Amino acid sequence: MKFSRTHTLKEIAEIIGCQYVGVDDFPVEGMNEIHVVTPGDIVFVDHPKYYDKALESAATIVLINKEVECPVGKALLVSDDPFRDFNTLTKHFRPFVAANVSISQSATIGEDTVIQPNCFIGHNVTIGKNCLLHANVIVYDNTVIGDNVIIHSGTILGADAFYYKKRPDGFDQLLSGGRVVIEDNVGIGALCTIDKGVTGDTTIGAGTKIDNQVHVGHDTVIGKKCLIASQTGIAGCVVIEDEVTMWGQVGTTSGITIGAKAVIMGQTGVTKSVEGGKSYFGTPIEESREKLKQLANVKRIPEILNKLK
Image (cartoon, rainbow, N blue to C red):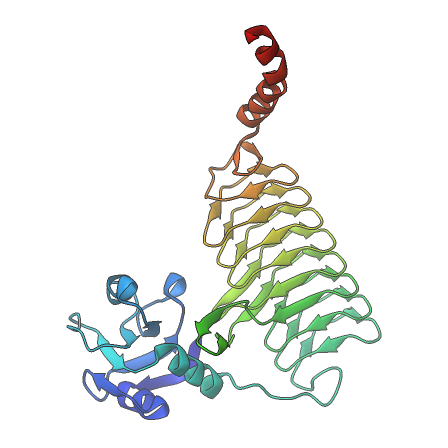
């Protein structure tokens, strides 16, 4: 998430009420999770295990729960609870604004786009030309939809990320201030759920087609001309490169990459990153030929045991 203007380190520290290490006018341009940070961004870290990763990241402002040696060219915001204060910044720069109409007056809708009854279009949504949104589609604030997009009934774009911190009295949610971006010529089936990024974008690439009842987690990036069949669940922060095919009931873990033109066969559990241009099957995932050979050998176990007897 980039701010509408550059703020100073002192201004940000005053918003969250914390101490800081760095000059008062150190520039702060935005806030992001560690996998998408760029210079000028704030990143938060609240566990010593990840201090080095945050301090060595592209982010130039680190919201941290201990005063440590500050790297050259960076600044620190020292907080007793970085998770809480990151949420405070999200609420400050991307506050929730209640709607009172079905289609917000701040939404921009392109020529020849059809929006069927009972759809909700939130604040600052942009929808391109020649799109079709069937009945009961929900489009949360700040979503961007390109041209020639078809979205079927019951699909929801922009729900919050499933991201929580365990506390002694329950779970605290990390607030989502990101967006969903749907590029041109995308087709999305019925009853799909695509969560917005925590601070960045969840992106569906141009020409991708998604079947019914597919879930896409926060900050995931799906490439161009992919095919994703029904009941597939894609976790957060996944990168799916161009022209990947995922058949029904595939599930993935978070933070992995699926290479271009890979084929993931039905009911596969994608437990790790995989190379492109190959076919995969099974849980844990393996190349399909190898996995099918293993299954064939398993079927021979009774025969082998009888021979041993």
